Length: 556
Image 1 (tube, rainbow, N blue to C red):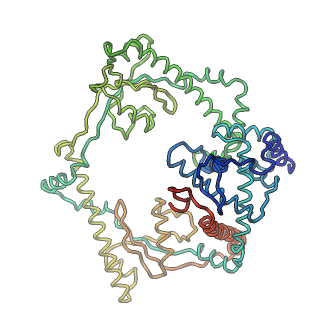
Image 2: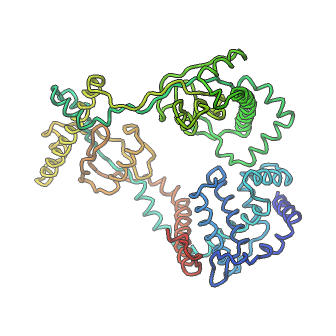
Image 3: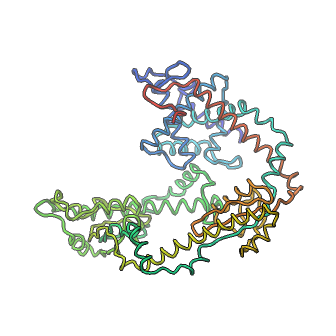
């Protein structure tokens, strides 16, 4: 198994001989100023190579290749600048990454475990296919792996101070993060005050007049459409895929991160289960392609015979559908934020549908009645046309009276809960200052605190708090308070609460002995990375000079 990664890079060197001598030749960039590092100009080729490495980095970290948007291109340029400075530092520190080290990194990239019996040819094939998707070569992968492995060496070297953390210091931090905190929570739910809100007609009219915009109905449209289901094309898809489907699935599995394949509960799928999932998705993809062919053919027929003298009509879809014995469906009215029930349309498809018109004076052919191409959903393709449009309008109070009453009462209940919480906060502060206990003050103010399951800063959850964001906020509050202290009233969407820290419980000593060694290793690693990042930021500012008129990567 040790020889396998060496063989992989031997293949890469054989097919890409320039790799034998570093990064290959350099061009002068034909006068293009790409910036400089320590006074030496960056060539166009160097920048392009670094940006291709950036594409690989984005694919491995985000699961998709970066698009050509301005934001993504800026990110790639930023990565490339930092990569070139990193290369400079690797040379400066005389760090030469061995073939074995780079190869081990490349196997990790593909998610290939040491015990996996994967041939070098298969790995090269997987990298080649992956590179073809993103416009990068096997040479780019080789260079990327060497530079990433080199960065790990630099982190270990520059971040050496992180290793100076002592076991005793780590134990202090571990105890801090794992010390159970006893807390009590006092809630002020808005629902408790809802029954006390009794608006009259004037209250409702005033509430509505100040919030008319909240009762505006957005533009809505109704469409006619024909649905081409992917499920009707499974046999065609399987025939097209042929006998190589299983090999294709295996290659896809190798290209992806095995940990990314999970079931609905978040548990990682086995290789067999993951491949079954890939196979199902592949068949669906090709089935959709077949459905789109049918939709395109229908769309082509729909466009025939139309010009300014023979404009499109809304009846064209039904006529052609009848000739093919297709069923025309009509959606319920819907707005641009909410797809109609039964259609799995993306935001982009909804935008297309809302651009349809039947009254544009410049559209003599009335071609804007229909989407100019089929719309692809998750498991079907649609040919769609506009039926009618309902413009946006503010609903009169009479039409939304019950909703306005409900909104008013909810609003007033929230105000009342906030006022009650803030009164309790003030009373509690005064009572504790006078030496009274938390329980005494709760009884005096007629509130009932709830004792929470003791939790530490590392406890992932507790049964009494199901909302994750709220629980994280509670952890943060508790971690910043001492026993006997309480938080300010914290307003929420459904009321609010106040947290009281009753005390701390001792840490499990057996857990301390068991966990601190691993905790120390992780802590040293975090400090190593932090030290490296601080050093690299300084080196970047010292050595990199951006082209005229451009911001550097650390300059925003």
